[in-house]
Each structure stands twice: as structure tokens, then as C-alpha cells.
Picture (cartoon, rainbow, N blue to C red):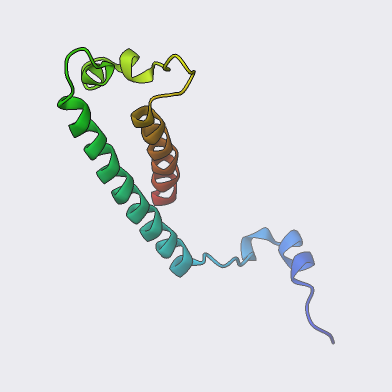
Length: 101
């Protein structure tokens, strides 16, 4: 009698299906995501601190008080670096949160 065909067995009796969870790799991935988020958070806080000390005529002075200012593009159609950084954080945070569930 040869080796069992697990694909056929699991197909006919799905309740006995066995799949690896790759727990160690998933934990490692979470740690890497966490480290990346920590570094990006530091960068965001630095940009926020810079914005808070800008002269009132500088649009960056409005970022902490007005989301629309932060989301604006400049005359060259470049998005604000602080907002771009936050969008990057948002994407990684979404992945991190999904992995935690």
C-alpha cells in the first residue's frame, strides 16, 4: 500500500485537515511590523514637532489643528511628507492589526 494521498483524504473528510500555522514566522513578522511602526512613529513625531514650531505663515503650522491643511498638495502637486508618512503608517498598522486577530 503506497503513501496516502492527503489531498484526496482531506477533500473527502475536511474535518481531519491538517495545516501548519507557522507560528514562529508569524510572531517574527509581528515583531518586524512592530519595529517598523515604532521607527515610523518616531519619524512622524519628529515631523509633528517641527510643524508645531513653524512660523504662523508656514502651512505646516496648521497641520496639528487642521487635517485639510495637512492633506493639501503644494503648487508642484507634491503631497505633504507628513501626510505621506502617516499614510504609510496606516497601511502597516492595518496589516499589523489584522495579524493580531
